Image (tube, rainbow, N blue to C red; front, side):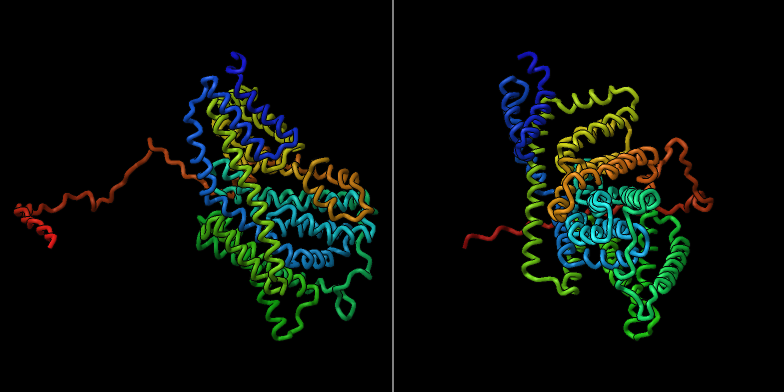
Length: 555
């Protein structure tokens, strides 16, 4: 009994881990562990029976959390876009654009994966869409099975780190930080990770060119009547857009030199995108014939998703909307895009609403189970046990970060992101805060690390999603081996975030430090003159207060 009393916190934690490894659903394993050991703690005298009276308030705190409303909004938006044919149009157009280049289809998958991540935020939707559309085409034209499956699975997981990610919403809620700040911090690392994927494919084109061939001439269907590619027209349109963006950047910087970096980026990108769209519309409406087929196709396929990104992320970064309001506007924009494509019907709405309800219920049930578990775990001072365990590590902040990232990486073999976020992050955040680590940077670092949970063989969900839609010619071992290089790239990205924290913090609003000891108050000379003396006003008698009206009689 003495051993149980003195070690109740680690016993609770490892009992929960054992239940998860036995295959019990996460939400019920967490809740059952909390309730059982709560009763044990009451019998041992470690807890008061009144502890469970706080449970309804904790569950109500989950249900009334406005931040979590963003989850169904962004999920619904992603599912509507995925079923409205946007992914097909993007993959076909970008595939034709990069087709003449060796590895072009792989580059197109990464580009479209980043675009889908910035509009949908749902891994399943991205992986399944690209697996159904791109994988058969890549195999048809001679791509290596491992490279093709690996790049599709990895590009789909970009939805976990590029805003508006569901992962970042959960992370912000668990760390007690703003979702908008989490989005700003993850913006640059997300696209740097996509750039690393591009670098890996570029390396393959030089080392193993036969694995990533270019599209043959007969497969390039978007061509001009004279046989030319039409890329010169697209290059001119792109150059005009860049010039407009640079000019607007100088004007905006002159008007608002103190504007945050994320605000400038959003406004500059929006100006270039809008110019390209206006020029393409004028060319089509007045039949000017100034743009080639590929230039028009790229413009009208890329601009609507980019406008939707601006509608969601732009309004959040500019401070016009909260993440929940941005999600609502994104869902509305997705419905409008589906109607414009004539893809919106009752069946699509029903499927999207059912999937949204299932995912939202899944997240909320895990969060409720985590609340029950943490009620007991914190009641027996389990957080202090974790704190003492991690603070006493050698190396201070660096030792803490190394141990935590290794722990999260290993746990990701068995747990998915939501389970890690609800179980591990609340235990790590107080320790990181005490060590002086910025929690926004810490959250983005953990999000990059937890992204590997979708790519880990043999339990990675992205691999399962791809396996469900891959042709029979692609073996499961091909998918697993194809994912390994991208897991290594994600680990490299974790190291880059640690080495260069400015990737995360440069987009955040800088806090103004005020040195109270050196504050100087300067008063203008004209205000230091003695004021004119005015005679005091005579005392006036206090006004008489009339008596209250008599109460009305019962008659």
